[in-house]
Image (cartoon, rainbow, N blue to C red; front, side, top):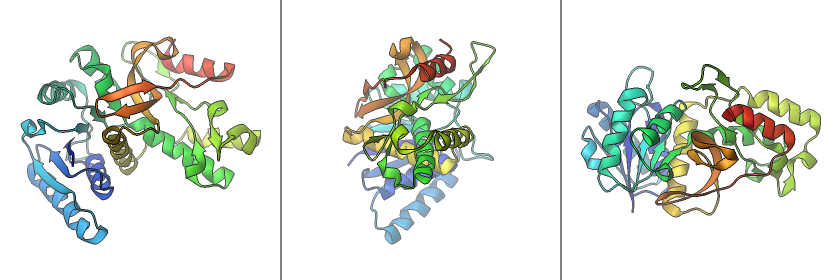
Length: 292
C-alpha cells in the first residue's frame, strides 16, 4: 500500500495521521518534524491505538525530510510547538522547494487554514505545477456547512451535496483590502437529490447563511480529517468531487490565483475542476471574493 509523508506533528498533523491510519487506505505514514522525539511519541500513540480500533497502518517518525522520496502524497500540516504553527511564509516556501524536489510527481496537500498564500508562492516562485498543489481546508469548511444544513433540514449529512467557491477569508497581500471569503452557491446545492431551495424555506436558508459566516476557520481535528479525506481521494482517483483550494487556471475568469472549486482528484493531483452554474447574486458574491 501507499506511503504518505506528513510534514508536521502538531495538532492538525496528528489528527491527519490518525484519520489516515484508521481508514485503512494507507499502508505507511511517515511523520516528519524537527521535534523528532515528540513526533515519535505521537506516532507510537496512534500505532498503539490500532490494536483497539483494528487498523494496521505503520507509522514512523523522523526529522529527515529526504525520507519523503517516493511517497504517494505529501501533506503540509503544522509543527510540533506551542500553538501548533502552520507551515507558511518564507520558511514554508523553503520547505516546499525541498519537498517538491524530493518527490517530483507527488501531490502536495496543504492541510492548514492559513496556507493559501504559501500555495500561491509555491506556484509563482517555486514553479510547482498547479495540479500538484491542493488545499484541503475548503473541504473541512464544506463539511461544516453540510452539517449545519443537515441539522436545519433534519436529514443525514450524507444527503447534503454542496460546493464551496472563492477564497479563504482574510487579506490578499497584493491588495490592501479584505476579501469576503468563501461563497456557497445554494442554487447548485441539493438534499437527497432535490434542489436545496425546494427543501428548506428562505427563512431557514438565511438562518443557515448567518451560521455559516462563523464557521471559519475549522478546528485542527476537522482540518486533519479533511486532509486525510483528500489524500484518500487522490490515491483512489475518486469519482466524487472534493472541495479544494487550487491555483485557478481560468475558472471564473481568474488565473494564477488560489481559489476554492469542486475538483476530481487522481494520483497525479487535480485532473478536472467543476464550475457550478451560479445565479446573479452568487456571481456578484464570487466576483467580490476573488477580486474580479
